[in-house]
Image 1 (tube, one colour):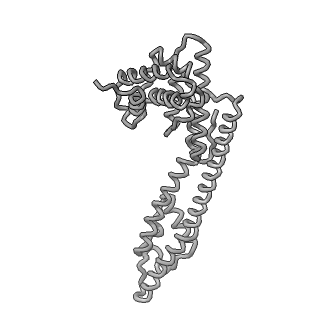
Image 2 (cartoon, helix red, strand yellow):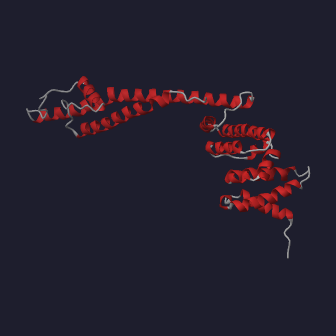
Image 3 (cartoon, one colour):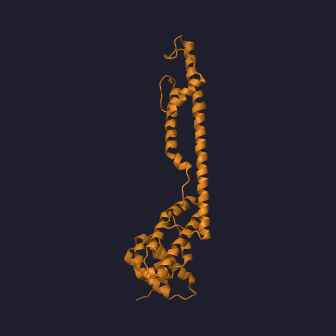
Length: 291
């Protein structure tokens, strides 16, 4: 029977555990494959640093998709004795929630000695740091904020790099609030211009033009409540305000197609404006705390 070389079998197992289909591998199969990898890891020499790093990365990725295997004493022992802080730099995180789940996994491991437990809990802090640095390189500041907000333990402020990353996230939050304030102020100014200038002028132009044409054809005005009276700017402003706030007294009503169209658009904009301001003003104008 043809024997597969150990190196080839090792590469095959690593490829299986690191492939996109690794979620489909059963827990028992993972344990079996990891057992073989750890056996090979123990036989490595000091010159096989790249292979050792690959095996450690494979081990960490396997924990992400099968956290239950950490209950095996051999795997928890390998985590405490063999995993180095630099190994977490090789992992990529799509969401802050994935980072937090991994941190909670590390935090939940039980060890026989306090020194081993302390070492693994330090790895959690290192994992947070690498994940924050990864998001910083991507410019994903919102993910940085969510990660710090969801972190099960507060990052140690004695770590200069974590302190820098937290300050960077805080500056992002300040910029976010200031930008949202500017957007809100711009939106309010735009709405004031629409309600106070644009819609009143368009409305009185459309209605007065229709009235002028009717006066030219007949001595009787179609405006029964205000016969042969042209609308002033104040009339248009009054109509725009009561329409925008959904009051609609009905003393001034559009009779032209353009006037009715303006009334419909203004009514929708008014309702949206009230809803936006009422629902988002606290979220937009208040800073979120990282503590």
